[in-house]
Image (cartoon, rainbow, N blue to C red; front, top):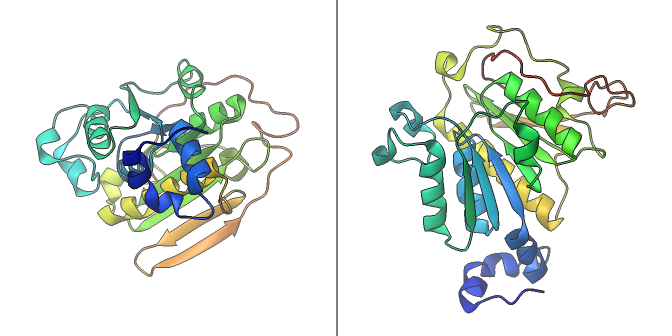
Length: 267
């Protein structure tokens, strides 16, 4: 067991007081490596809460720069950050919250050629991308590398999330077999999104990450959690692992990652 400093004992005292976390759980968090794919609306709250929680190594993948329109929901970015890479903006805030942690920035687009090399050094992946091809690519790569991950999506007033543990639970492709055709679902820039929705869903994804690492509670595996913020109705939809799933089924037909044309973002 690691020796905690006095500052660490004070910083993480509210975790350590939890019977289901304690010193051992906090040590697991400090030794964990988590990758955030997307430093946007979902990645912003996830990055702040995981940094505060003491995740020892946090990677961030995003190839975009901060734009004025991002500030309505991407709470990790400030007005002064406009024009700088999102991964740098997020890194600076995370280190400011918790200098204990290490933040690795990956300013790049994930693609079939680089995703497996990037994700395989991490214990858990948080997916907060804004397009369907990326979501399917991340699912397939995580299944191939046997890395658990949290899926998240938001649009208008709605959000959805599920947690996938390869080999033990249904995957994203078990439920959504292929990406929808381009232009079928409107993009966030076309349809809009309530800023606070990103915080609502992002904090759920952060909680799922902490639960997985500490082994606490029941994960959203084989479950699609959806919510409508206009009515504040939350719903859990049971999912089943499919024997004929093309990536995690008994006879997978997807044996090689391929890049698909970028469609639109959505849930």
